[in-house]
Image (cartoon, rainbow, N blue to C red):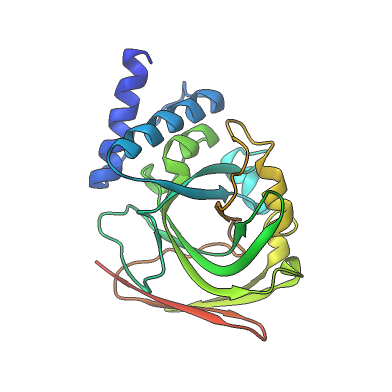
Length: 237
């Protein structure tokens, strides 16, 4: 790793620790970003963060043009960012948003052992959510935390319909919004840059089902599956 790359990693980890904003990095390309992400993962592992799965981001093609994307991105999910807790501390997260998602438990790829309703909290250290695809990858894939909710039947996931409601906000989505369905999103993961084979037992969250709302402390958000379970989370400082 060059001195410049080492400084980039230090800057990324510092932003993660403090919520500091990151400067734009126009010279960073996607391949280099995934190499940085791998080094960040190694450093986080040295701190005691164990990877338990992955998040697939930008599986909703409707968001690609705004960020110059032509494919999804991926990033690790750690034991320290995965939770079943429904009361979420936003801490110093910059410009957090809430994404309703379908989470898959992989038994032996591509077999799915279970599916669950989930909420991913995402955040951007680049002000205004203005970033290149490479900057998004380096910025932890925008991943902050993943809330694991009630389980869903593993069949028909593309047809799952959800409603998300919160303060002054209400919208609906469906499983097919995630790259045609969670199974399609999982299959696409194998072709993304830097992606190693999905290991037995990995948890994979497959992308937002709606345009994610901005969130702040002191709110209550409910994700309801049509004819199925719900997941309610509250936010605090």
